[in-house]
Image (cartoon, rainbow, N blue to C red; front, side, top):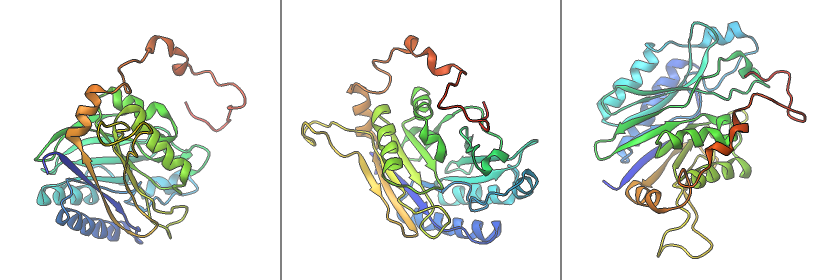
Length: 295
């Protein structure tokens, strides 16, 4: 398994309370470890089952702090299982709460904290505080040391999210999710993996959870491999779940991915950043002006 990084996509339904969600989530981690996972990845804001409220005070009341029992429980479980766990929460801050992802390594230490940058301000996420940057951290799985980044759900809609993570060195991007994963959104993830030569693993809620339908997925980003493909390229898909609740496994061939990144033409090899200045402009013109957009 030294050449493989196995990510468990934890596509499970939340229950009625944070205590029940914690219990069910920890049990899923046990199963993931029994099946050889190096990392377990949860859907978006699992602490509350992605429950969004219609005013900021309710949202604040549901948020939990970084030293909450929920956070501590997943860190303890990561250490006991010798397995990294990417868990998600509605995170308490001094202001509005944040939609956040924490990655605990196999020793139980949190090595990555990320809060969703592209909040859905056209909906109830307008009562959340956006994150301020994208982050990449080194993760030691015990068999590999690799660079892990994260983005959350709607971040996927913006090519810049995955691009920045690639530029910061990410080899695999973990994506907690809570929305219908139809063909276009799945295709976005495929495209982000391909154009950045990164692995992308996404965990969604199963069908039966409001506005979700499963289809957790993973892509390795390697479109062309000598002896494995023809001129039409290869399918970069590793895993695509169905709608049902379950834990689905994605084996990333990390040694092969690194060799591919050393030799192929995508990613950062032939970019012209000096010509992309418009990308950081704050100017917005019709038809894209939205009164509820935050910048």
